[in-house]
Length: 138
Ligand SMILES: [Ca+2]
Ligand SMILES: [Ca+2]
Image (cartoon, rainbow, N blue to C red; front, side, top):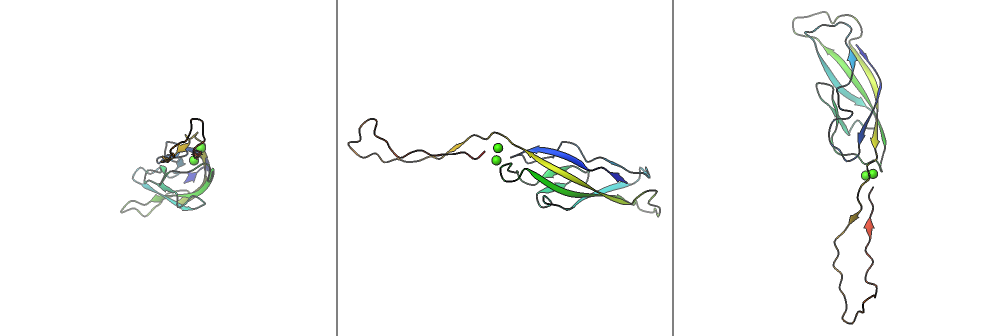
């Protein structure tokens, strides 16, 4: 079992697969009856990402580039021995790889909150009212 370290990217504010495709690995024993198990073992992003049983890493919820732009996870790929077999084949039975996940910055529109402004009678044109504040969340 050989699994390569990888760097992958995902846009912020997206819930879905990271980098599109399943993680790459080479199963040295090349036994078609075997399946493979994937798990995220540790890392700064281990609570934030899931990995499917096909090896696709996804975000559990959207990430914010402005909070953190890089995460690391350690992924383990394991040969799952099929029933009735005693030989797990050549090479390592399971292997870990380090994944660096970078969050792409997306230009986010500023959020303007609705506000009710009371205008006192007698306010002249050009008088300043309460200032609007746009919250730029990008
Ligand atoms: Ca953001
Ligand atoms: Ca942004």
